[in-house]
Image: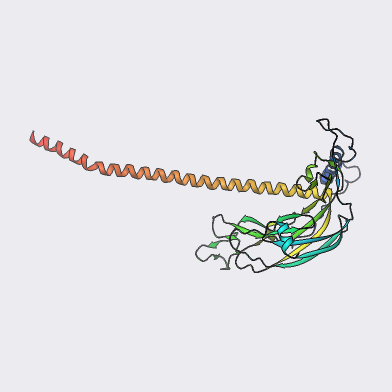
Length: 329
């Protein structure tokens, strides 16, 4: 399983009489980001109840619907059905975490569940839902098969060095095959931030999390599916041999600054993956186009050769006629 958390340390101060070296750079960056965050809260959040909008109307301030520490029960569902409402109305939760104190720093509940997917072939999707927070995320993702690090016998499909069978998610050659992978971990985190903000100026770090009710001017707790530590090596390929998978389930709290750092880093990584995928698709299209142009050129050359072959008898006839004329003379 992936590590639950990681710590990053900064180097200590420089020796007496020596200037400070680069060790404190990361720590200073963290402090700078935290200061920027609180500065942003000042411009977009509480304390501006009487502020005016650009159109002259009074600002509408949104408040948290529930206070920190509010007790609640969390219901988690897993299904191939995309709608959490339909699943919650028909199925039983795979996990019930009772009497959870909302976003308290020391909150952490854990459980395991053996999942037996009913569909293991084709392009099938799987979802995990939390009806308590009305949140859904895909339990699987689509990635191309990994390239083999060792030599592969293309006839047998085995490792050419020790004749061992290749993993199911390993590509045998240079082909690009997209398959489905399941997440073995589900980490649901409650973001510890209960600040107020302008209805028309949702803090950018919560643009994908904020669930605002315009009628009551309240928002639901910020809930985040944390996939930061879910690395490619931990994903499980979905195939016909997958009968069951043990899932590790976690419900915990996360500080707002920590959420900002991890979510931004995760978003940057996903953007890089998308760019790499687009580059690979473009390279494949270019190879296909080059192959088509080469084929056209070969066909044209073949046609020219055939044309010359067809015209050869006429040239021979003309040469024979000239020879006969010379003989007559």
